[in-house]
Length: 220
Ligand code: DC
Image 1 (tube, rainbow, N blue to C red):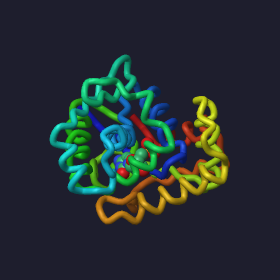
Image 2: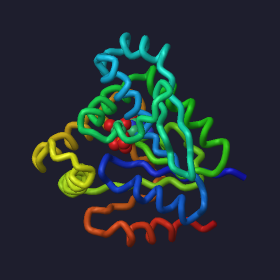
Image 3: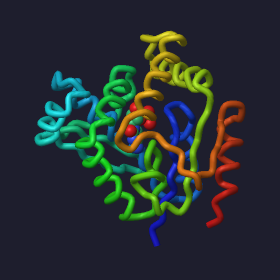
């Protein structure tokens, strides 16, 4: 029987690293839903569309072709036939993703896809609204969090490791605070911790240790 594990939390909390680790350990698939919103954001940027304009985005969606391919368990985002996996982690795409993900027309389309994918086989799925909206019946629900400062530190390191030096620490922190606000205050399916979620704070603990803690809740 296919089952799902929901891992929600703000950006930079370490949720994707943890979700990936859990999927590997359990030998099941991993779906990064943020990558889907990022690809929509990239699509808007490429086409010169304002990612917060509902009418323009709805029109864009009519012709946009978004596919997800899993190759050797790695998720590839295919936008209009092009593999854009390597193009969706820039600060510009992050902000566009945050704006576009607030639009119901985008969320409905992405949530439909996510539910379809998740029902096909067992998945660990990370995002913002997985437990609260996409998969309320997920077998396990985790909420991974960390202080904004710690998340900014990690994000800066990640950008630098990818050869991106376009922002300094203060700019990364300001972006994180702005995105948190946008993601948690939006009207439609905001970032929300469900009461039954197991909360994991990664501010002061290494990822390895956190992964062990998380796995200790999963008795399979
Ligand atoms: O997790 P991430 O940073 O890659 O997510 C990119 C953006 O997408 C983020 O601003 C919030 C949004 N998002 C969302 O609204 N719902 C999800 N399930 C996943 C991401």
